Amino acid sequence: MSGETVKLLGYWPSPLALRVKWALKLKEIEYEYVEEDIQNKSPLLLEYNPVHKKIPVLVHGGKPLAESLVILEYLDETWKHNPILPDDPYERAQARFWARFVDEKCMPSIMSAFTKKGEEKAKAAKEARENLKILESGLGKKQFFGGESVGFVDIAAGWIGYWTRMFEKVAEVNIIDTAMMPLLESWFQRVLQVPILKECLPPQDRLLKQVKGFHKILTGGSS
Image 1 (cartoon, rainbow, N blue to C red):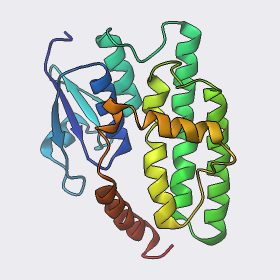
Image 2: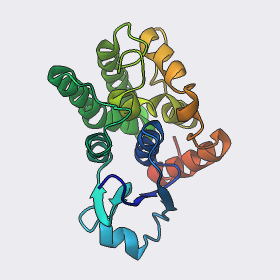
Image 3: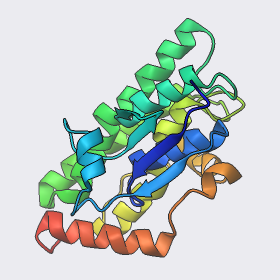
Image 4: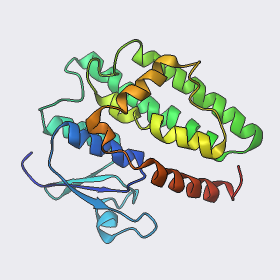
């Protein structure tokens, strides 16, 4: 089964699609990448993800899977080599917990800080900083959330250190407070310098331009 063809439908500025790319690269899985236009979704995307009509979608042997964290777990269960989830059941549960925390707490508050205005923006930024500080507690003093090597939570959360810096610049807001979360800030720098992860990052100038356009649409043209 693991020898069947693998295809990833993604969108280059999406950190969720990046997660899947990272996992595929770390696990050394050969795949075909299909770039989607989210303004003009392809019949293939609508066929493979009729429920949410969103990327990323992984297609393995003709069978589609949506939702990035679901895809990461599927990859790890299907291709046993280069595991990204721990063997220990408790540690696996912890990794799932922190990955969901990123999606359910960190991501929404970061996006709110990026898109809100005035007092609402300040409140959202404060909440985002508090959530990131909680995330830091899951890292502790380890090199990576996965211990000595990149694992499930590193893949789930690593994008924050790249995208959020651009959100801060464009929206003129402080989200990653280096004094408040020094261990997390060091981890951002460390994880984004891992060669196999770094090579998948979109160019900064291109992404910054995209983020500016996105911010203008979401805020009606002002910060």
